[in-house]
Length: 147
Image 1 (cartoon, rainbow, N blue to C red):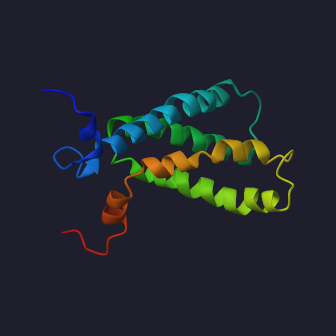
Image 2 (cartoon, rainbow, N blue to C red):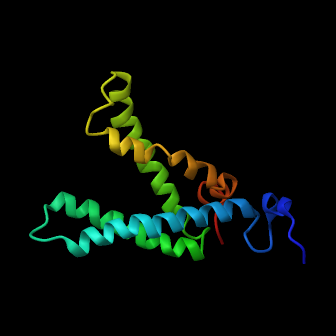
Image 3 (cartoon, helix red, strand yellow):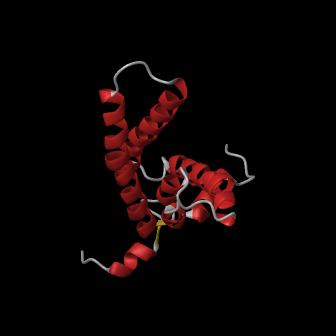
């Protein structure tokens, strides 16, 4: 069997429910980045933290650690873990709209405490590109009932 680069852009009905392989590969890459990079940061913070936790910070670190750890399942099962990517898109875009955009439109984003987070959240566009939106709408927003 020879490799044909064009096949990664064609829907794969046998293995991936009609999702193009390029989307599967991109999602796996995103899951791997979350699992290894975010996971390293969050697990290190949790395992090396000393003293009592401030409750809100502990919630944030716990959520991000759970998010990163579950991303490991996405490497193996990219379509089953799509809700994780949808959550990522939702919370990052929401934050960019309600926090970063008002600061940017007022010319006060640069140098603010939100600037660093904006820099990290803005590449969410890559997640938006990787998601197979046809599959998402068909499987998550369809009005047809499951049997």
